[in-house]
Image (tube, rainbow, N blue to C red):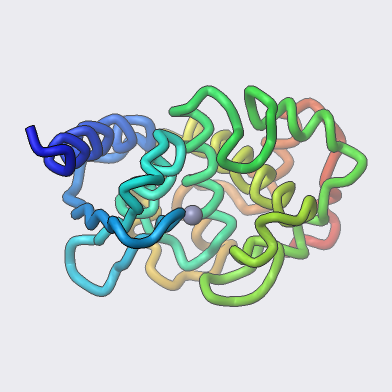
Length: 212
Ligand SMILES: [Zn+2]
């Protein structure tokens, strides 16, 4: 079989896995494989079917699952979109290598770096294409990486605790972040974050400067 056809089959086989992990019905995504560029992974939403662009030489299961998650669910808030994709990438590789940590799971990273975690209020409202700790340009510095870990951990908690979280996200459009949480969990943002801290078991990330 042609190598590219084989890779496309493998990619398509991961879509229902990620949909199931997100508790979403499967929807269509299209893969575009690039031979000429290395380390390329992004999702293009300009057409009705999201187009997942990947380098042929960069098809690791965590990167691929991360990008499929972006294809299945979009949020204008990076905390939600990168958080979900980070959580799914870690889940499918059984480690956090794609977030540039050696640990096996997100909670272990939070425990290890508990004294260095950035304030939630400094990145929780960051929108797609706006600058901040969840921007691709900050991904290699420790603060940016830890912001991705916190977002991923909160999204892991939300998907596990709230059955309709991802499917409700699909209907949120450009709603304010506080309204997104009310509609997806039935709880205010601060309430969900307080539940998440209990789930982690650490008094981390003060919530006093996060508005509902
Ligand atoms: Zn991403």
